[in-house]
Length: 191
Image (cartoon, rainbow, N blue to C red; front, top):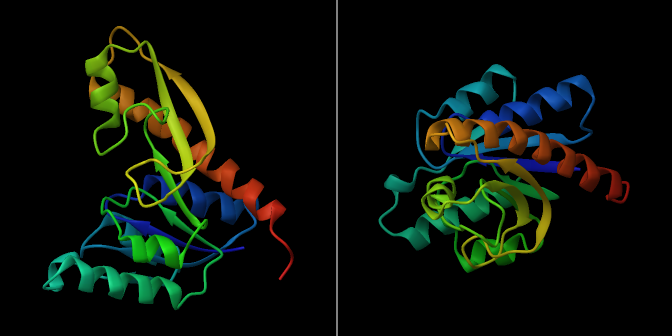
């Protein structure tokens, strides 16, 4: 199974995937890693791992539609079976979703459908939940509304800050992403 991974930041989920591929725990080919801006540590990690990288810089395009079309074309050029949004902090268009329909995987630091959007951890804490977690789902044209593939709960501790809770969720999220990709790769028809 060929994947393209999209990142916006440090790429800690990406590193878990790279490590799992390296150890043989995950049987996928990382065709490329892309970012929406220059200078991300996720791209640096990928380069250090010998992976092909690309940047479709959001700020280099006069309109969101032009950026989205360029991103769609660049990702499609790698012919991925699955596109992984790994901390990719840009909302893509319906055209992008359609181009990779049922193949655009996203992670989210809450138990969807609760607390969608960019601040899932903060929103869960503000609501006062005792249990939150993470979700791996197929992205659709909504914000964190696509079909859920896997979820895992994380208990909110009395001493948690948003940062400490998010760090504990990230540990679970990395494991859940790798196991979900492994299950998808095992179910994929041979090439």
